[in-house]
Image (cartoon, rainbow, N blue to C red):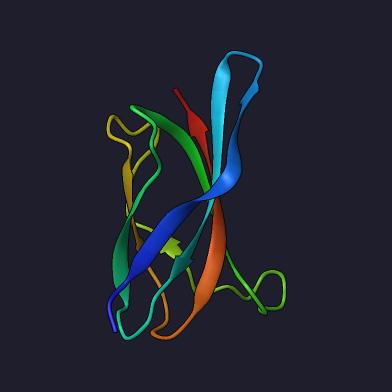
Length: 89
């Protein structure tokens, strides 16, 4: 099964002069995947695994921020699912 992600319905808002997008991801059988945030520039990205004890997540972001494309690559444990928040414009 492949990696997949999506933007939540109603998962877009504005904080000050920044856009905030909220979505989900599912690793299936993959250990890396790309998340299209819908933003042109990503200033911050916060992935969280569902069902994981805080501080013990296995999700790693493979980017340096601010990032000048809206697609963020993450590395994770195969078969995990999670949520993400991206902040940018």
